[in-house]
Length: 317
Image 1: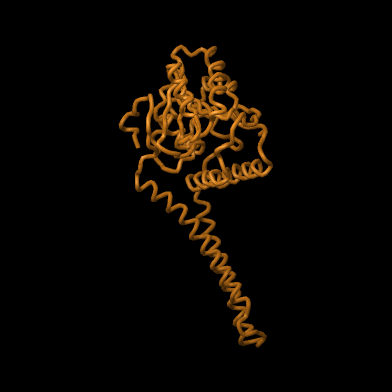
Image 2 (image 1 turned 90 degrees about the vertical axis):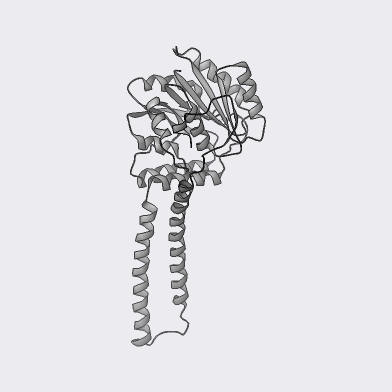
């Protein structure tokens, strides 16, 4: 198998037929003597997405599907596809048609110039609110500055990766996946192609602000300990301020005699210290929650049905 195309699906009934036709139109002319396959991962869709995928699979033997028992999340869906992909190269693309399938031949050609990863970098983002663009821009740049690896900015999961990278990803069993960060952590030669991201073709995005915040937390906690260091430094700073306030309080009480019983600064100090402590405890709690999830070693996902065989035992979770 030359190429596997991994497509996570969540309520994409409006886009699946058009995506399939555009992918075929792109891949059929490509020089792929070993052939290609589509792997649709239905991540707990509530619409007719699964029925559409099964219809395509009945007509086209190159269409494979994995149906989850419930919604496990976008990154887990991509992971399930990677577990079962057989291609020497693997493309990851969403079903909303914001990422153009027509870019795949250029990504694939670039891969054969000696690279192991070729990702698509967004030059512009159409059809998205100013708030979403701003938060995404801030997230990518903050993450790039606080991590010890080079995670490219303005990129999603749309990319092509080699078999070598796929095998490396399969050996990374953490529960809170941030695949674009994991690919950067793996290393090897990586490059990019720029493109203009189109507006969503149909339906509504499954990436709510809550899910975006969760993904951001996964990315930060998986690849940076800066928040923990910030909590430590903040503790020292607050302790220093509290010591100065204590000296000033003693001076006002015993030297200048200029003080009021029940001084308001006492309450301000208590609230300030309490707030900093809660923030620090919350940051530590986020890291501990992720450690706990990995210690439990539950499977990343449960497959309800599929027309693909189970992955080899060493790669099962």
